[in-house]
Image (cartoon, rainbow, N blue to C red; front, top):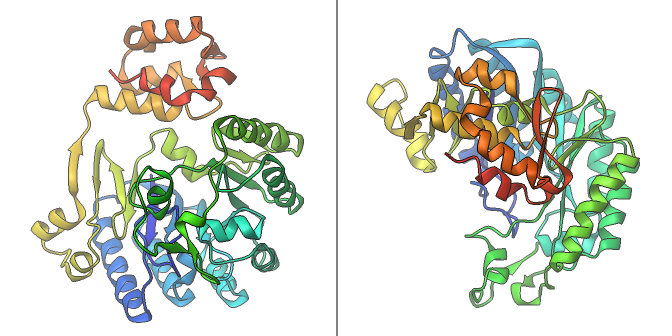
Length: 398
């Protein structure tokens, strides 16, 4: 199984972010950390027969939490679960929030993979995104991570952001690959509901005075337009071609790595491995069921997890036991994100059905249209299929 730990605190919410995150003072952070430890201990009794192969600490910005609190959380995790000696333990950090002392503490506590949010190497684009850092501050933070001894580092990038050109995106890719991170996640911007970006780009007028930015207020209406669809496509093709030339293998639609540095945790999600999520709003997929924790900070921190009724109410929201049909659907539309594709043999092993007996007509249609192919026991998307992957994956809903 896998474990996800959610740290909801951040310095300030970015203009495009729809994650469950918000600023929090030290008192709130301490209260939350202690409650997180309590939840971990309480949940562990239900998963003693499992071995943990990966842990991912996300947010928010986990690196703004006091390093000693993070060490306590990881210590509790190791005491409560059977974590394999070679487990991948990833932690997200943001530039401007990491110190040499903090990184040394994370490493001592067992973190062996760092994921850094850069998004763009252009300071103007970073301001338009509402990021709290400059590219120079990212470089200093990246250097601290390397000096702390971390040899497995991911850098997050976002393309098709306001005002971005093909040339500026290529410059971001160049500057990133020059640093030689082991892994790069390169996503195209999605304008999510409930964000300032949706007010600006989603067809609604922004509220009076709606602004983003830290060093200077940037009113939403002053933000430049998003790149057009043709430019976005060019960025998409440039990403895969340029990163391949630099030695990064594309193993998932939006993820690239040096050989042997694929993110084990995210790969587990796409392959349907069970996981437990701890913390505010964290989702879980465990023993064939999906559920999530309450997104209400006060409800979470005030809960007594020892009481079964409270445990179920606070940590088992929207509880759903998946049918075999739902499991097959998820196996297909998550697994097809992997460049390798989905295994015919694994499908039989998991569900007791031949994949062609369930999806034969869809597979034939996709192959005839050049959107999928069968190779070495795997059904996978072609290059054309990846271009319209959302459509192809939707065809596997039973």
